[in-house]
Length: 165
Image 1 (cartoon, rainbow, N blue to C red):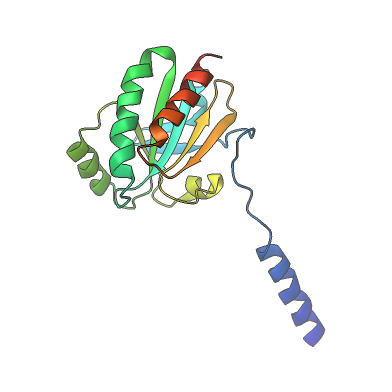
Image 2: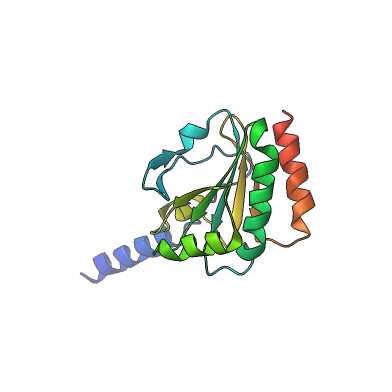
């Protein structure tokens, strides 16, 4: 009995200590099925052939107050070039992000709901916001954690580089 218990504990510790595989540059973007603000089901495959910026955010995230208006302006600037920003919200109650978006006058982003955090776990999102730039073939080109005003130029250069391919 003692030996069985020790074996089980050892197996659990080994399993639990295995590192999570984060979605990183060079990886195929993990697929998703999420609902948008109207309740319509959306999938990663719908954006095939487009450059996608998948941004994970929440209404309680201070840097998101800066990143979302900027992402909205970038979406507006590049929407005719096959570029889409998909903002994945992690709030459990969607009325909070709706008010948040309205207050910030966000109107160009595709907003999807991930109230359980399942997709965020799949992508191993470490902080808010975290963005993944995905090329037209579905591969992750860039994983960007956090947001500061100084990040704008770097991100824009990367977006333009991927759009130019």
